Image 1 (cartoon, one colour):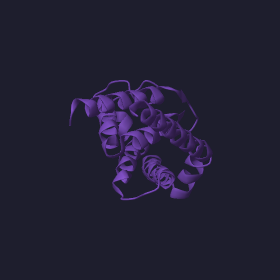
Image 2: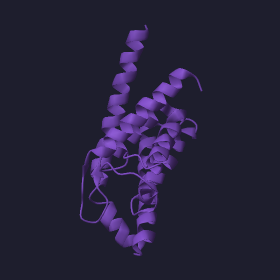
Image 3: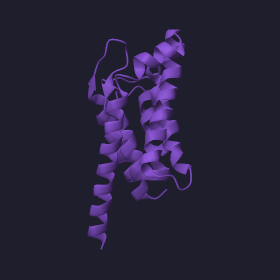
Image 4: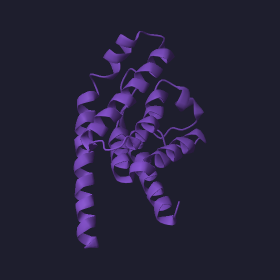
Length: 168
């Protein structure tokens, strides 16, 4: 990987860290954050290098640096109730390897992967049914995450357009 790609991975990892710090705590343990917005932007901008940025973020958090939601870090966060969402971010970033996938469809598939991983992990952690975990985790967040998806798509298209103008 060349220095430009390393720099991009670093910058987008920092974006994910900042997005993770901006949270609204909720009573059932899963906070509202801007993490999905950052993940969507990372995937749209870095494409096949997106997983490197998200893996870097997870490794920094695993080492105990306060990069996760609410300035937290450590392995306990990865194995705690929200760990499935964190691993879901990484798995969702691999969807770019599906050939010829539309960006909006890619975003919706990312949401499905992130939610599925988060729900299954939360269900196991809290020892509850999939249906109850689904009811707790999807309705409060889904509309906002779809809005974040479209915001990320718009930001990405605007940045790509601007970069094309500057490179012309």
